[in-house]
Length: 113
Image (cartoon, rainbow, N blue to C red; front, top):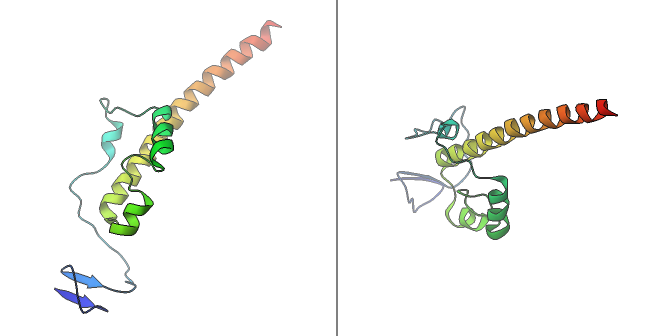
């Protein structure tokens, strides 16, 4: 084990301080594109709202207390954040479709007058 800025490393490389780098590569076992598969069960916005109200954070995202206690794994967190972005994209696409239908209905109602 190697420690930089620490005499008690707890990992193969432990750094107590800032790391400056041009690039960091994290090997991953999976990625978040499963959100776009047909069998993905996208939570309803009501379910998301309920989870936030009950837990105070997004589902599958660690709470502030968990992060303060345990830190985060950058690769895992990036995958989770991408999952949330992809879910948001699906919600926005659905909302766009709903807005288009409402606009058409609004135009029909205007033309009936």
